[in-house]
Amino acid sequence: MKVARGAGSGWLVATAAACLLLPGFVLGHAGDIRAEEDHFHADTDDDRDRIRESVEKGEIKSLADLRRIVLARVNGKIVSTEIDRKGKSLIYEFRVLSTEGRLVEVEVDAASGLIREIENQE
Image 1 (cartoon, rainbow, N blue to C red):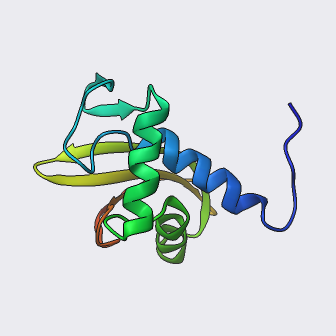
Image 2: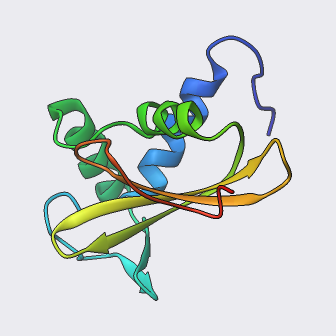
Image 3: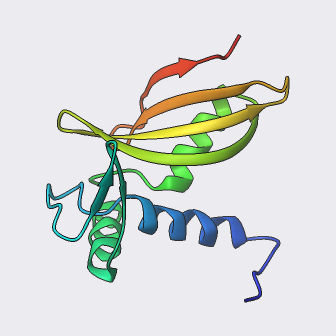
């Protein structure tokens, strides 16, 4: 499979990642979701559709928006993203390889975009 690179391709990658990472959480439905230690993965097209609809309705921020928020606080490259549910909140966990070579973990609330915690920044 050939992947487009250049202007605009970041949006496509971020949108695809959001569709794969956020299943079932927004509507509190875990129907066809597989859970592993509080990390959840989309298993069906319906799950991805629910996430896309939630982003379109403004119930949660897009992965692209949250990535920008994280990179505004931590200089580096995002190397992984996971989703956790903490109470009723959906939390993104970003791992950023900082320009200083540290692996920094950043927790961001999916609905508000507020950074909840930064670990190993200094």
